[in-house]
Length: 174
Image (cartoon, rainbow, N blue to C red; front, top):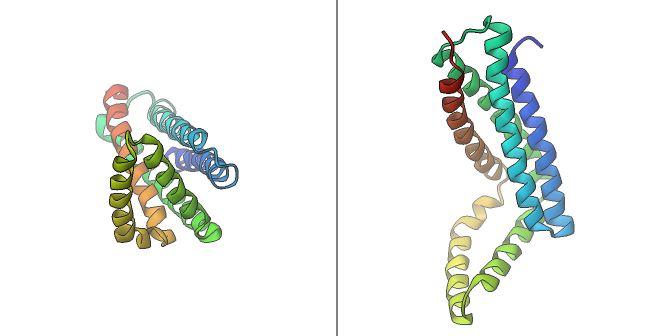
């Protein structure tokens, strides 16, 4: 595949897919939420390294060692969008297949965090009441697989754009 942006976008999607599936299985099946959160962050970090490597590849292998800030940013943004779109559809399929199992586990985990993190039972009750109200307002949206996948997309893409900006600034050579 000659197009570096698409190739690196696919690689990022694969890294994110494996970390997402691994963390989701830990979350739902093994209930190890803390490890799954860290694995998710590691996957995001590795994907951002691949983003920078994609810009480097474009500069060194396709541009003869020279790249402007604009070209570097467009490359990074294209990689980000390719990865974001692919990862959106992977997430959508995952949430369609899993149904409400992940959402129920997430809800129970949030309740546990509120109870264990509150200094007093009264503070926990107050925070749980607030959480319940927020959940009633937004919980129905989270039952929609496309909405959940969209949340993941809009988490990945802004981070990728920021890394693209910084990478373009650091890697430009004219």
